[in-house]
Image (cartoon, rainbow, N blue to C red):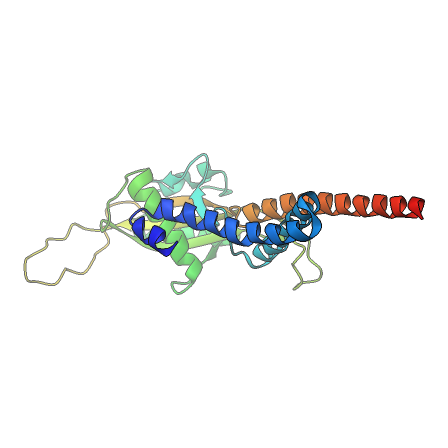
Length: 268
């Protein structure tokens, strides 16, 4: 067995299939062989299949509770609709998540950014600190939208200035702190403000020049919505399916036991 696995070690997919087949043959097949020799082929199969389904149901329940095992898509930031990239701060209201357009007419780039911050904070948006891990996640997702989705900038041509967060409230809650029954939630949004950088000349043998924001270009705003993903969905589906099979087989074993007791009573 070991020589067979080592012989195909260069192909991870085939090796994985063979490991699973060997596991099924030795563990499940060995258990069925022992039960079949003691209980009979049919009854042994029912007992082995019922035990396997019950074990898979228990395993899936643990996966769902701790979020481990077979997992679905993780939570992530997605481009918001209908507008994901705003190139003019005066048009932030077109995103349909900002209530009013900031008053940035006839203002400098610096004053426009300050007016946008004042407007967003007045509408309940929270500016995340630079040390907040959620800020880093939002910036990473905004980088993909800017560089890949819209191709607005390339890497090193811009810098994130601020990240604003709003929404995501969960309900219903028991009091103020107990929220394990809060299965409903409001949409959560994030706005990442980025500024263009002045082109820097690189010289061999010298350290890169310090990045300088280009005040002649307007700040861009990347608007995103939080996708909660489905991390526990595969485990939940396995648990539901295995649970149905387990209870069906258990009911069949119970019915067989009832028939056996009735037949034994008639003979007596």
